[in-house]
Length: 157
Image 1 (cartoon, rainbow, N blue to C red):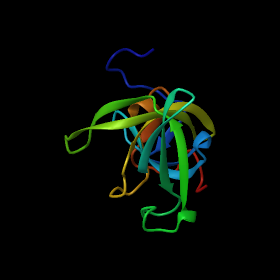
Image 2 (cartoon, one colour; image 1 turned 90 degrees about the vertical axis):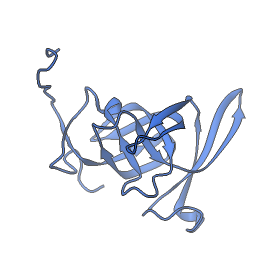
Image 3 (tube, one colour; image 1 turned 90 degrees about the horizontal axis):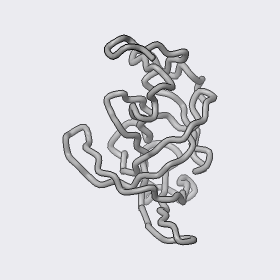
């Protein structure tokens, strides 16, 4: 382990944008922004509905397949309906400094041929360029990030 303040070394370096998939959710590949300035990761989600199944709290939501058109405005065929276990409700501070409570789920993430568990908060990212943001908790110890490069771990799809 490097000393505190010493530069970290990584065997793999990712770009600021990469293709990711969430196979257990039936999502991907989709483009994600890798952001070491963000602590938590986020997935664009619409129409959250909470329910109980087998004694566990779950959430159902929609994710548009292409572009940033909301599911409500596009054809239903262009949206994936996802069902996931709610891990907890987590307070998150956005880049504007505003706190909000978000649903947190956990699912496997596939990026650059590597699969690992990731925690995602669900939020509308309709105003953002990319539907997925991977924060430093997800990236820590796995990849270095070169902000001057994109798609270093995978080709376009």
